[in-house]
Image (cartoon, rainbow, N blue to C red; front, side, top):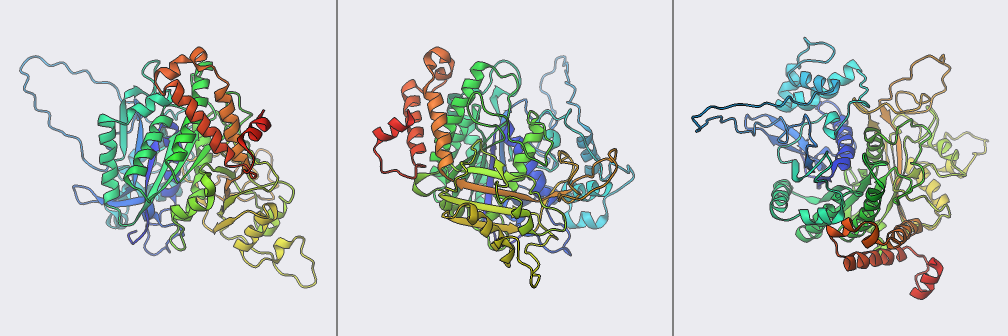
Length: 589
């Protein structure tokens, strides 16, 4: 899996970011090709993964990742991972008096993690006597059990895991091994409990100094210095809690230290927060506003990623997808949907052939200072098995096929400053319409002779004057355990719609792969979203309603200045920017 490529370092900042990231890395792991006989896939895995070697000489293949979270957030996961023997086993004592040992019981592992442990030791969930084939061990040595056999074993037994009631933290469904330099625990704040919580933007800003800063710089240097052609950083950051302040400082550090590299930042937010209150709802809205502004300033682009209906205190209902039966209140579910979309939206800089570097994607979407973009997705893309792409898109002649993934509904007027559309997963399906002599095609899409042209023609029919980039990949997102089975019974195993006449009591088929359509846009809708967020925050009397937010920083004058900058950023999305500011104020009123 080696070869020249443009490497990417990923940072995940916050608990929900690690939820999304865990699903995302599980998807990447499921798509890895270990058999030298099989052809290489469309994506170059070396962009995101790194090859290493343990002290025992075993080859490993782990994410090029730094994951930051709070004290108490790991549960059963060791901070150093389990591939490398990094813990000091020296138990020599100099104390000669009586010693009393208190040992805390380890957290209970769910069935999936128990099966992973069994696989790691050479067994199989379905057959305790199963051992890893010698050829697999020779091929990947120590990492063969950790990765190759996970895929082969779990796919072979087709075991279904229902983890909805047992997932407490993101490591409860992590199926890959991590490098010892990956996990960074912030001990100043607790993941659970009523005290020492990272809730405000100012708390996060103040974190990146002293030991936390030194630790992050050390981890960055480790991963960056081994890259030959670093193209940039992929940052996932919790947007609604104190990690938004930390993310603002982290992206500023990346901008200052690695100028010229791409920094694509995704501000993720769950639909709901446990143990929330009216005061914390205000915190969440203010964190979203300040985090959006600051991370956009320090990134190549910034994209909110959430299934919430909005970023305010009382948002509309969560985004619904026709072919998904997910529970938006479960982080395990909502993060899986976002990870599928993110897997599709990031393919342009991960391709093995014809890839576009990060800076090219960001430059196409962020002209004139519009560094906040919005995401939309069709998860899954609804296509009847055996049909063709023009027929599938004809079904959306009146409505768009995608739903908001950034709490930013489209205006529906075809206005857009730039757009990147990606469709992946139509492997085995016809991308063009069969030409039948003497038969009038039902739409102009049926005249196109390539899948890219079909998709581009459809998008241009909805956005006539929008600059457009289109990517079309045949390989789908592979869904291996423990990805939640949240799909409509109308879908077949490959994620396509099927004409089924099964009895009503027939259990639904397990969906093992999925076609996904996404769109990244810069348009007037983003400006309206930013303007609404700025107005809602500016209308608050913070010194009366929630003075505790200001006690952590920023100062009231700094907050007021930031909200004014957010208002200015929103005006960048006005198509007519020649009017005076007083005219714009009148229209806002």
